[in-house]
Amino acid sequence: MPTLKQFEIFAKLAETGNMGEAGAALGLSQPALSQQMRALEARLGIKLFERVPKGMELTPGGRELLVPARRVLGAARDFREAADRVAARPVGSIRFGVTPTIGPYLMPSVIRELHRRYPDLRLYIREGIPAQQQAELAAGELDMVLSPMPIKGRGLHVEPLFREPLRIVAPPDDPLLSQERLSEKHFADRTFLTLDHRHHYHRQLENVCARLGATILADYEGTSLDALRQMAGSGVGLAMLPELYIRSDAGGLNVVQIAEPRNWREYRSVGISWRTTAAYSELYAEVAEIIAQEARRRLEVRT
Image 1 (tube, rainbow, N blue to C red):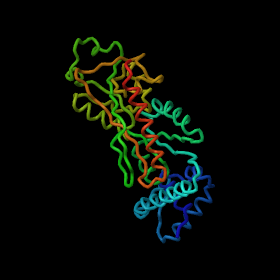
Image 2: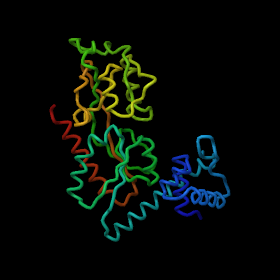
Image 3: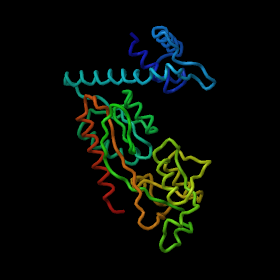
Image 4: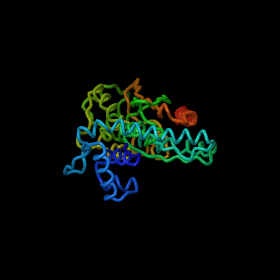
C-alpha cells in the first residue's frame, strides 16, 4: 500500500509539474522526491509521469489515479481533524483559499473579528484561481474557499453568502461621461480590460460584452483589480470593478468615474465552501456567517 507521503508527493508533483518546486513545497530534496516517486510507481506497476520540455506531465494512468489520490489525502486530513475534536483540542489553523478579486478588500475586517472570538485560531490565506482552489479543497489541501459562484466539486458543501454589484468605470475625460443619459448602445464597439481568463470575472465580462456589443482587449490580461483601475484611468479601455473593491481603501474612484447605462444591474454571487466531511464544519459555518455579515454591512453603507 502506498504511504500518505507518497500520495502527497504524487498530488504536489501533478499540481506543479516541476520536481524542484514540488520538493521545496514538501520540504524534500529533489533526489528524495524522485526516489519516493520511483518507489510509488514500482509499487503500483505503472508509470505516473513522463518528462516533457516544460517539466513533468501526467501519463493517462496518472491522470486517472490523481482524483482518488486526492480523496485519500482529504480523508486523512478529515481523520486528523476528527481526532482533534474528539480529544477536545482547539483548532490551530484554517487553510483558507480566496480569489484576489475579493480577499484583500473584505478579509482584513473578518480576520479582526475572528481573532476577537478565537485568539488562538490562525488563518492561513492563499490567493489563487477559483477552479484550482476548489480542486485543492476537495483534495484536502485547503479547508475553506471563498469564491464567486458557481463553486463546483465533489463532496463540497457550498454556502451562498452575498451578491456584489459590478460597476463600469471610465477615465474622467471619456465621452461616455458627457452623455446625459447613457444607454447600452453607447457601449457598442467599446473595449474592456480583463483579468486572467481562468477567473470567473473574465467569463462574466465576456457575457456583459456580448450583451453590450463591446469587446475585450485581446492582448492584455490584468494581474489585479488595481491594474485594471489604473489602466482604465489612463484611457486604455473601460473596466468593470466590484463594489467592495471600489469602497475599499485600496480602490476608490480617484482616477476613474462610474459610467453605466440606465437600469444597469450586474452582480456577482459570492459563496464559500468546505468539505462535507470536515470535522469543524460548525466553525466553518460561523466563519461563513461572519464574512456574509461584513460584506452586507459594507454594501449597505452609502458612499
